Amino acid sequence: MLIPTKYDNLNFNVLILGAHTIRYIKQGKHNIEELFQVLKEKHKVDLDMFFDIITFLWLAEIIVYKNYSITLSK
Picture 1 (tube, rainbow, N blue to C red):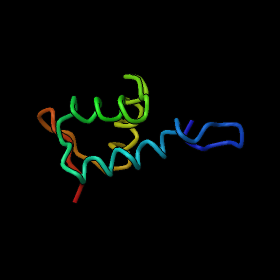
Picture 2 (picture 1 turned 120 degrees about the horizontal axis):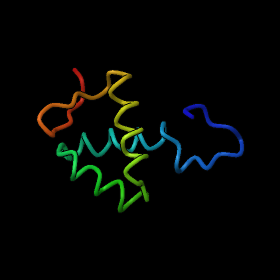
Picture 3 (picture 1 turned 180 degrees about the horizontal axis):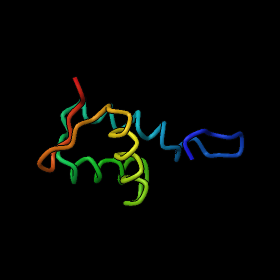
């Protein structure tokens, strides 16, 4: 669920992790595998959560996915 409640751990919310993902993309982490490894190491994100984050950012038209590379939309 995207809308946090008072019982949710915000460290594992898609909105918060999406913000971290955008920050890593701005730092130059454009390869999808490299981005997953950074989120896995620093934020304990599993593969299902990573797909939720990428899907959310793509649906909101924040990122563009092309040829195993993720960039920010213009």
